[in-house]
Amino acid sequence: MNYKIRFSGRSHQYTSDEIDVVVEAMRNAEPLTQGAYRNAFEKALADFQGITGNTFAVGCATDALEMAAQLCQFKPGDELIIPSHTYTASAYPFIKKGANLVWADIDLQSRVVTAETIERCLSPKTKAILVVHLYGFVADMDPILELARSRNIIVIEDAAQAIGARYKGRRCGTMGDMGVFSFHSHKNITTLGEGGALWVRNDQFASIVPMLRHNGHCNFPFERDDYWIPAMGNVDLPELNGEPIMPSNYCLGEIECALGAALLKRIDAINAEKRRRALWFIDSLSEHGRLEFHRVDTDRHNYHLLAARMTDGSRDRFIRKMANEYGVQCVVQYYPLNRYDLYKKLDLGDAQTPNTDLFYDNMISFPFQQTLCDDDLSYMIDCTVKTLKSL
Ligand SMILES: Cc1ncc(COP(=O)(O)O)c(C=O)c1O
Image (cartoon, rainbow, N blue to C red; front, side):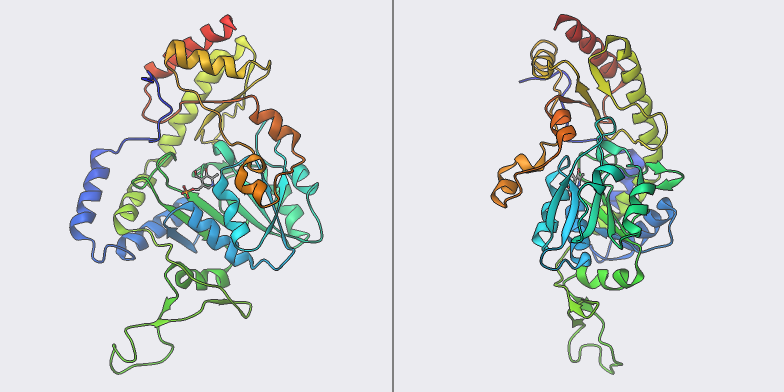
C-alpha cells in the first residue's frame, strides 16, 4: 500500500556535517575497527551521560544485553525479573546465558515496570532485574533500586529506546549496575542502522569487558623482547569471581563510532523536538477522548515512540480506517513476549500481567520518526480527529 505517512524504519536524516564526519572516517580510519574513533565515541558517550567511564561501544544493544547477561553469572535456578512488554532482544540473551525469566507487569499509565510490579515477582532466586525504559520514558528508578539494593539484586537498565532521557537529573542507563543503549535504525540517533553501547558500574566488570567484547584478546602478562613471539598478542579466558566467561566479537566499527560521537551533539535537540511534537499531538486530541496517551512534559521522556491506548475497544477499526482512508500507517507494538512462539516453546508462555494485556490489546503506535515535518503531524492530527468522530 502506498501510505501518505509511513511508520518508517528510519528515524532521522544526517546533517552535512555528520556526512562529512563519516566520509572523513572512511578516508582516514586505520584500523577500521577498535581505533581512535571508538575511544573518542566512548569518551563522548560517558561525558554525555555524566559519568567517568566504563562505557563500551558494541555492535548493537542485543550484544550489550548478552554481555550484561554474562556478567550476571546466572547459576541454575537463578531468576531475572523482566517486563513481557518489551522488544524480544531485551529477554532472550538472558535465556541464552542461563537465567529463568519471570514476567513482570507494567503500570498501565506509564507502560513500564514499577517497584510494585517487580516486588510481586521477587523470590529467593531473584538474581537480577531488567528495567526497560520503553517508548523512551524512564521508569521510577529510586524505589526499584531501593528494592534491589536491600536484597543484593543486580539492576540492568535497558535504555535502548531512551537515550538522553533523565530521571531526577541523572541520565537513564547510569542508575543501576549496567545500562544498555541502541543506535539501531529506528532509534532517536542511529549509527548507520546498527550500533549499541554497554555501561557497567563495577570496575571489575569493566576490566574484562574489552576481552569479552573482542574474542578474548589481551596482552601477554610479561615483557617480550620480540613483539611477535610467542604470538602477536594473547587470547585468554575472561574470568569473573574465579569463573570463566566465554568471549565473542561484539565490536562496533570506526565509521559508526565517528558518526555516533557527532550525533551525540544533537541528541538533546532531537529529543526536545520529539517531545514538543508529542505534546502538541497529545494536547490537540485531548478533548476527543478515547485515546489515552502518556503525557510527560519533562526530559524524563524522549518520546522515541508515540503510543496510545484506545479506551473503548475500537483500536482495530481505528487503525484500519487511518490506513485505508487516510494513508496513515499506525502500528501495534510490543506483543507480550510470552505470546510469541519462541517463548512458548521455552515454557515461558504464561504471565500474570493484566495491565500488559490490556495495554497491548488496545495500543496504537503512531508514525513518529524525526523525519516527519510539522505538516505531516498536523495532517495526522486531523485524520485522527476525523477517524475518532466517525467510529
Ligand atoms: C527495548 C529494546 N531493547 C533492546 C533492543 C535491541 O537493540 P538492537 O537492535 O540495537 O540490538 C531494542 C531494539 O529495538 C529495543 O527496543
